[in-house]
Image (cartoon, rainbow, N blue to C red; front, side):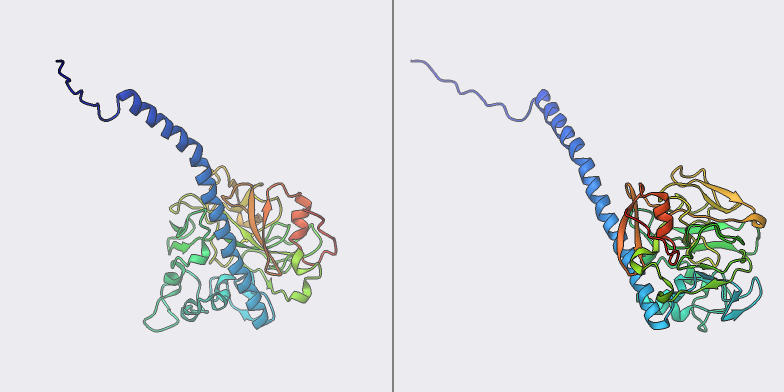
Length: 337
């Protein structure tokens, strides 16, 4: 009689099987990761477009209440305010929009007679000063594809009196197809935000726009678009300084999105940090500033129009069409895009 000796079954994987499973998983991850990353960026792009929509609605609400869009910036020669260079009331379009974007609290604490960097005179006794308010990372400043919470944080090169500590932001107003703070313009038509001719950085005269001035049509005139921030905060790159009184809180349509070279003050513009956002310095005596609409989205930027609509504009838009969309009263059709 034969005896049956039971055989023990092998449990687990062999090394070869384990390596095969790991290889299969690696292939699947390699195939799926780009799709996941693409889906995440698509979601971020949509989120950034929604934030831009909030800005557009804030602009429309401001216009409904005040009958004008806000000034691009305020420095000294405003029709409503007259003061000397270095004086108070220096602010950008952001401050007057706060009440129309559910941030009345920030607006009520802001000292309208002081500059954004002022640390001495709060509007409310015992409350925060303008410098402190300028550092609050308001979520509406930021596009999720860039660096939410980013700030300027470096010593000013031209003065030891203060250190820039101010929120950056990704949403810029449209200041047309020309370089800024120069006495002559080469293109017909004006943008919805801008400076009266002849102004310079220290003494510019801003203007405000009523929708009746937009004779090319609100659906065919750019209101705002996106900008790209420097990859670090501790550098002398002043771009995307939304709360500064001279900017750069604007974009110029001197080149299509994500192309061209920015021009800003020498010492406040570092074009070596990110090859996707080149910049050259220009002396204050020959300023001619320009800032391009840029983003970290693939292939274009979100842009809003004066009717409140938001669209994704591709980098391949014709330069002449992009420039024409940046003007409000040229009388020339922008064409298809």
